[in-house]
Image (cartoon, rainbow, N blue to C red):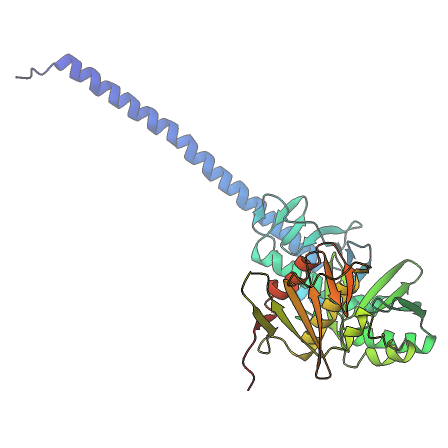
Amino acid sequence: MRVWNGNKSLSITLTLLFLAGCSILSTEPTIIMEKAQDVAESSSTDAWNQEWETMINNLKHVSVITSEGWEVTIDHKRFVDAFPKNPLKAKSFSPSGAFNYTVLIWSSSNEPSVLLINPKGVQWDNEYYGNEEAVVLAALVRKAVSQSFFEQLNMDRMMLRSKDMDRTKRLPDNKLLQLSKLLREAQYISGKPRLIYPLYPSYSLEIDAGGKEIVAVDILSPTLFSVALGGEKLFFQSDESLLAPLKDEMSTMDYARQHPKYLFRAKDIGIVDQSIPYHMESLQINPDKVNRFEAKSLIHELVREIAKAEKTDRPINNKVLPPLTLEFVLDERVVPVYIYTDHYVYLDAVYARQGILNQIKKYVYEDEWFIKQRPKK
């Protein structure tokens, strides 16, 4: 039997009421503080947005400085039309990666507003923003710089260089004018094309820009070229061939059959992989994913890799199977190159290069250029 103790129950009741009161008293200031903070943040955001709109409404000039130091003026009207409202909303803790571009926005103030841009966001007033609109702003700046770069570049002199032939020549004024026009009229390509290796003879234009710096333009195909800008490689497409005027000035060399660069003539290539004991696999270029220019550029890049090796007087060991064999196809004739760990054999001569087997395997397996050989129809 339990006996009810009135005094003890009263004490418990008073204690509970006291604790409840403390809870109520301690909650109300917290709610008030949270509401005050929300109001402050809202006011701060409103002021922030008003600052952006004021800047945009009084915009006079927008220029961009690339990480290489080039200053490019971009169309400020297009900038106003694209971002009439503040696109910088969600703050991030820290910038993601290095900044590619510095944007100077000149309005009614004597001092420009400064935006720091990288592909993943924008920094303004020491705050970094990685929201979707900020990424769109970064992409617009990148595109605008790319579209205006060659138009504003002073091309005072051009040197033509072939990396494959190791030759350099200054271009005459008529070729300078012709190529300057083609570069300025070319269209910027967003993203990265599949053809990323230059075709033989790997021409590049070294442009003297007003005696300041040298701009290197790599010619990848007859109409495709690239330039390093904003810490990355950007790609452009021209309407007319760039190779034709360049070959007029620097014709390609015909290498002797004994030279590995003779294989630049190859029209196709096959791979025989015997790296696994008692197993052989034949591979071919994937015709469903790789077009004619891409296949040719890959063959040329493989030739460059083997051409980096040094010829030796080492004897050939025919008792050891090559882990990898490159079968270059030249006019219905197959010319094999036997690849070992640190050397290869070409036309009964041994060429040494540290790690060449692993280097060649990267091209064969990492980018899905090759597939298992299909039966011939």
